[in-house]
Length: 109
Length: 144
Image (tube, rainbow over the protein chains, first blue to last red):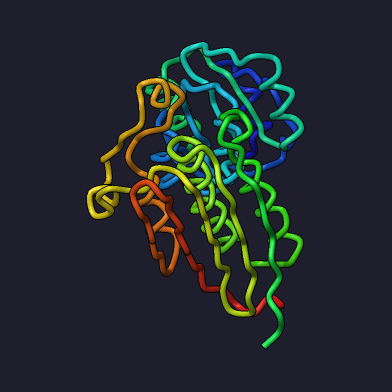
């Protein structure tokens, strides 16, 4: 599945999609940045409620396919601009992380 | 042996929002050199943790990344307060970060453990009141 395909699902909304054709191979949920960086695998989705600029650095370095901001978290406009510039896909959902994970499982991840 | 390639970065201790820029730049530079993507991932994660540590604890510092034929070496040097108990600091979950830092998603006590986890060797030299120098190496295939 690609990030574009995922973002077309009714539960998810694209916020920034600079790399829509990236493959998605799994998912990781976490809000402590170092913890996520130590455990999230490349080419996976990262589900989090954090939306500050450091999330972009972690997403870039961990090489995740996309960041899914759960619980309806909305980033500031400068974060969205920075995500586009840095090539990081951002997706939002009103679902909590657990609910979003259930949808991902149903989609075959 | 070919002469090593060196990248040098100043890490700004005042600006939390720009923390990580050096690591992201290193990632780009190594990618241009054709370094293996998993090696790049390990180097950039270890360096980011060190960079964040320098911002949180030491008021900034310098980062040197040296590309040797068979490994990539990262040297992080600061003139911060030093680490009182290195064994304790190396334990996962131990942190002296403030609540403000934690609210940003840092301070999980994973910084130094992650740096060790993602590198093939790590040496810490630290003197309380003087500063800390951390040298990490990640082995790689010949790139130069």
